[in-house]
Structure formats: C-alpha cells, structure tokens
Image (cartoon, rainbow, N blue to C red; front, side, top):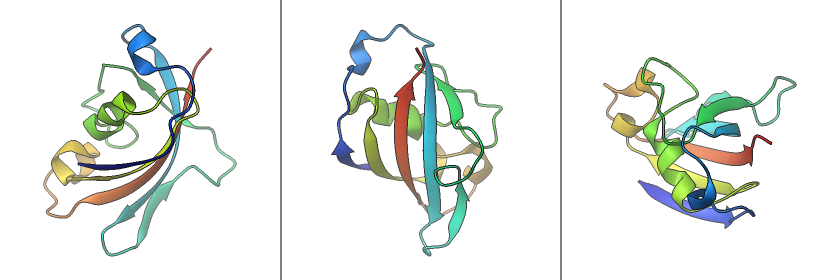
Length: 109
C-alpha cells in the first residue's frame, strides 16, 4: 500500500481505544482514473468505521487499507492511498487493479 500524508491531523491513533468510532469522508477512483464512489462532496453523511475492527461483511466503506492508514494520521487527518484490491473494499477482493482513495478522518467525540 502507498500512503501520502497531506495533513497528520491532531490526536494520534495510538491514544484511541479499540473500536473507537471514526468518521470518514472519501473519494475513490480505480486506476483508470474513473470515479467509483465518493461521499466527500455530497450532501450525505460520512462513512463510519471502527478503529481496529474491520467489518468484513461490508461491501463498501470499511476495509483493511482504511484502518492501516490510521497508523499515520490522527483526528482531522487527510491522506491519499493506493491500495491493492485485496486490502481495499471487499467488493474488489477479486479485482486485479488497485484503487486510489482520498480520505479525511474525524474521530467521533
């Protein structure tokens, strides 16, 4: 996985209890530069993930890549990642190509 940190944010993840609720705004592209999904610029709410607990039955909006990236940012962190299909969304687990995500994290208060 490739991670580019834009802003590390504030509170560090190591200070979080396991299963802390984290809200994520994201944009997702496939490697052909085609927008696949996003909630960054829509009126809908953010996605919710739990720190150190991946919902493997979730097709979208929770994956190992999003949790692993939390090792590098904190509250209000902003990153770009390129994740291989096998650690991205489970909908892509059989895909060959990687996916690009822009992520903004907010820790639930």
